[in-house]
Length: 149
Image (cartoon, rainbow, N blue to C red; front, side, top):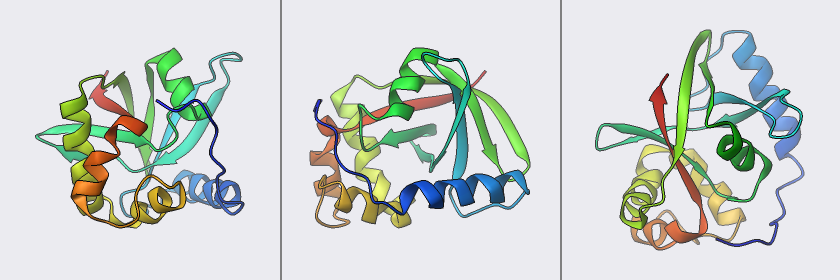
């Protein structure tokens, strides 16, 4: 996995704040959920919008920046809360190390979460919504299996 930090768009932080607010108000925004995990150092709850997807009956979430803060917090905590509107679910998060599973999850991403494709393009992981291109980028992302706790 890469160790360099890629630049996120400037609009992302304010957009994430808005998504978190709308979720707290009980609104559902397509596939977007808010994942809250304890900070790896502070233990303070750290919310971030994510779009879970289902592949072969299992739910997953993908971190386009595998060394990003939320992915590192998930690795440290292994648990969190997934909110969708007013629904809240305590979940376990397990990183997928099997390259074949990660490739299957990535291949499904453009079909399951089409609005997420532009972010992967912006990060330079893919150039289009081609499932084969997403599968080829599987070794450059982190994927986590979501299970009920």
